[in-house]
Image (cartoon, rainbow, N blue to C red; front, side):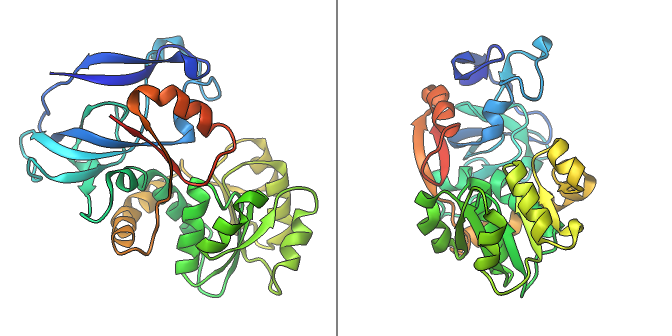
Length: 309
């Protein structure tokens, strides 16, 4: 059996992507084979071959994608899930940009029937990242929380999870996205010089915590200026900006791994009952993954980008 798969043949821009044919192995013990219906696209996907993290030629070609949704069509020994089950896949070790993938049973979770394939495929990577950030800074009822890039795929999840905990949220966003941020339940403020003053003007309370997913000096400086307790500031972006200011980096520690694993069932349940919304911005065929990456790297309407095999 073969599958179409998108890989990065070299380091560089989206032109490095190619659709190739690959053999699909039978699932081994503890594994399942999934016929993919939809694939979540994330900024890390294009960053993985952009040279930002690595440029080791021995790692080429690079498989892309960490999340998908589909139907189990074969199982290995010792697997409890049945053939025909609709599932969400995360993390998709070995990549998710394909018609068919083989993953450990531990990487799947049942897909609620009322979630579309697109919503299901775009839920968990952003969802667990947001949940990890919210847990790390200890968001609780009555808090005032600053969320940078609140209209982004992760930022919008952070806003929803913080509001669900009873927090008041102030979210930074481009003016074009302010209505969307307000729909999520936050007060919207514009990026740019004077950010900390605009945040102060948006609330009569002190800012208790700040969460950042963009890694700019503006976001870091505003967070540090507004939040008295540095342990309640967190970011997903590594580097000197966070390090020099004592901002907590999430995503690499054992506690982050535990937070993300523990969050998955609750995220799926919240999405199933309508308490957590996955907004879809654009849908592309799998063969247009390069174009999806080009557009995702530029300003775009809020929501997830999805590939369909």
